[in-house]
Amino acid sequence: MSNKWVPLVEYRRNNVPEITTHGAIAWVSGKKLIYSYGGNVLCYGRSMMKPLQLKVFTKELDNVLSWESKAVSIASHNAEPIHIKAVTDILKSSEMGLMQTPLSLPLMQFGKQLRRPRRWYHPCSGKHAAILRGCQIRGWSRVGYTWPHHNFHQTYLDIVADHLGPTWSPAVTAKDGCGLPTISMTVNELATLFAALAVEKDEDWIWDSFIKHPDIIGGFNRLDSTILKSCNGQVIAKEGADGLLGLSILHPDYPEGLGVVIKIAHGWDTTATWVVARWVLGVLGFDLRNPYRLERQKPFIVEEVIPPELRANMESIRKWDPWDPDEDRWDFEFDQYVDTERPPQHGPLI
Image 1 (cartoon, rainbow, N blue to C red):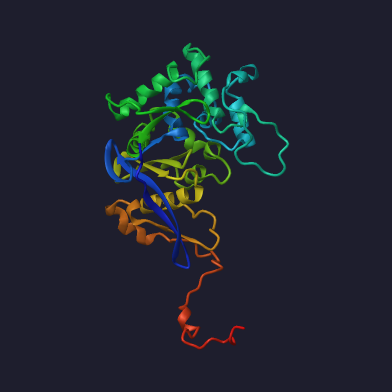
Image 2: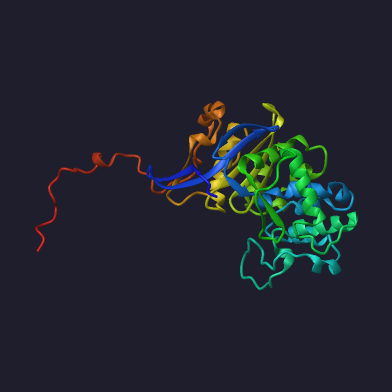
């Protein structure tokens, strides 16, 4: 099994390409694939699929969890205090031992760390806690909830098949980093699922959980949290390892919802994913700030990332911020300042 990745972003130093980031992107409206650039590659949905996974329990948890705990159930969080509070509110302290997330330290740490690894520090602890609570309410066994034959995962597969068709089944099922199953899909299929989130936004609490508590979804300086705060409730965004970003978009030109999924080939790369997302959202009329300045390099988006009918909108997007000092920019031709035909200035070598 091999994937053929396509170039998404090129980084240049004084206009000479140094790095090319490869990946894939797909745009889906309703269940119609409207544009794909490398989107037939096979990958795992990883944590990007949490909003679909928690649809298994939206009715059971609706009047049980606070909005903060609903948000953390679909989050891949930094384990900041707001995240830990929302996680520990889902289960009783005597139930925390049922949670099977790996022992972890916070995803983003500040200062000297004296903490011991804990299961609730794991980025997926909110999802695990919510699954355990949902299983309890439904009367499902909480033992073995991480196995692919458990009622939870089988019901989740039914939800995916409802959107991708009754004949769909995952080519591969693997163990995710948090211990739960993760299923293989193409980027095109993942975008179909994110288009459905926009269509179904009023059917349950998933969409509103993103919008009400964006900082719980990721955390400080996280891409998905930043997108959520930049798009006025019209876009939900969810990161996933390794190198995934799903966007579900409300837009008047796409009344059946718009799903866009970005996959970076080499894995987790916040800057490259951020650059691609900024151009995707930019051509649709949303303003996402640049990532923090690259050191002496500039990112250039590959035109084929954007559907042809939207490429004219690329002209209105600033490639980088005007306040960027760009310390190494040379806006002159070298030959105008140096006589390249001059004789050597040094004496003969001895």
